[in-house]
Image (cartoon, rainbow, N blue to C red; front, side, top):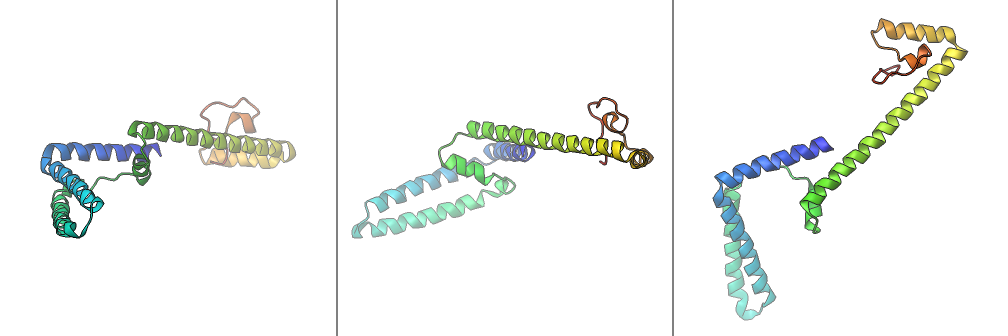
Length: 172
């Protein structure tokens, strides 16, 4: 999740940096489009039969502004912005808060995954320990199989030693 977010952030930053430097016209077109939108809102707010020609004129200007903006946006084709970020911002959220929340969620997910991995390793250790006591021949054959494949055997399991950090779990 962090990787995806960072990819988006870098993509947006690079594209916007190039866009701001190389396409001042695009920014101008975008500002003009926002202005046209505001003008249409004002005409619609005060709508009456006498404002219909004005509304039609503003709509035609708006359409031409959209077409002009579309001509200047080729540099933004590669920009990918996550929809959940846009929704968060649309609801009045802050970009910095969004970033902090994404990193907190990633950390929470990583901790949950770490707990699951540790639980599975503990279960595996229990199963292998039980196998050593109940079926020592099978445990020895399993240890031999792992060694023949070049896989490390965790000392805590088949040899009764303490578990070393970074050792490979059995069966991986």
